[in-house]
Image (cartoon, rainbow, N blue to C red; front, side, top):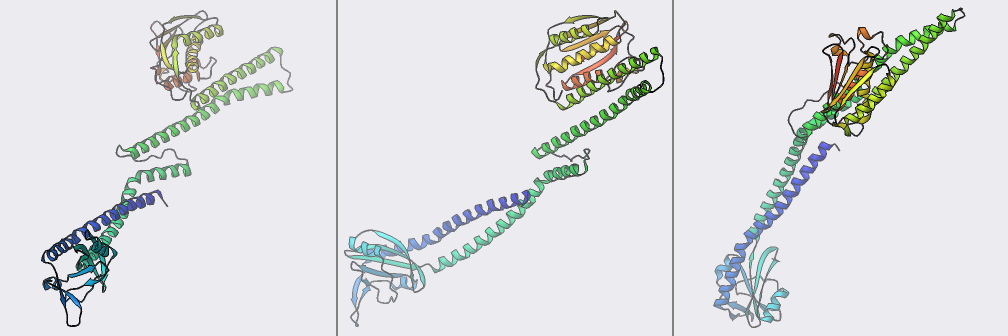
Length: 451
């Protein structure tokens, strides 16, 4: 059974139960209201007979009958009889219907007190019977048929059954309609998910209208598809760029190795140069592969952020840069600053900024590092970046024309931007006054998503 059918069945069952309970209550209320006039007339008749008294009459056939009964009551279909303490009965002269004698009637005759109500069937006629104490050793029974009341109750019962049936059918139809309407967004979401699964097309989206829970679910699903699409695009782009970047050093490396492995006699100096090129190309490939792994790992891992002393992290990155670049003068202004993020990735980003600045600095050149208010600024005094290259320096594998002769993979600054985005910040590059480049990494303290 589908979820929509289950909702319709549940709605129909709830309405059916409500209608049945209401119908039963209504039936008994109407029954009580219809019987009330009958009970009132029986009480009045019993009081009238008790006030007038009854006179025994001896008939010619030797039987004893009751006198003093007004025939108008009999004409209206009512019946009267006296019950003796021994269970015997006395009937009015013109009444040929004897009421059943119950144990309650005999008990009332013997106790000379009390009253009871009962229903009885006499000659196939349903009657309402009232028994009251009459005199010492006697009980008075008065009865009236319930034929009209029962006929009305049967009609009312039939109407209630028809109404209940129509209500249940209507509830089932309405429940099916409501479930179909309410679950339409779920159906669209399911259809989209199945289509994405079948085709792998992550560009599919669900049309969203409204601001209810299902609309929010559809919006979240669209956001998830967009994130997956962007992640897939980035992975494909990374693979394509990596393939392109690796092709050149691999081709050159292969050529040099083939030359070294050939039977051709090479001068010592040329062989030494070829070996040096091979080692250098292997180093470039090692750096490139390591940074590709770093990018891929950063895109896939989610690390719990924490409060980070940005000045201490920058100081650690600065010490490493001094060891790796002894020919460059590193100066720093480090003010205490706390951000919320992942220390290792922030340190890696600052280290990449320092390495990039050192790469553009001449021997003995100065690189200045400043940390203040959640912001890291790295300034070098090199030749600077051309205005045309500034918008692209943080793209993966992008290398300015002036940098293509320098070592590097083109991924260092891409990693910096990735860290900035993951921490809800940004990184910008600009030409500095007096020459060189100034790069600023801003971390606004937002919790990173994936770094």
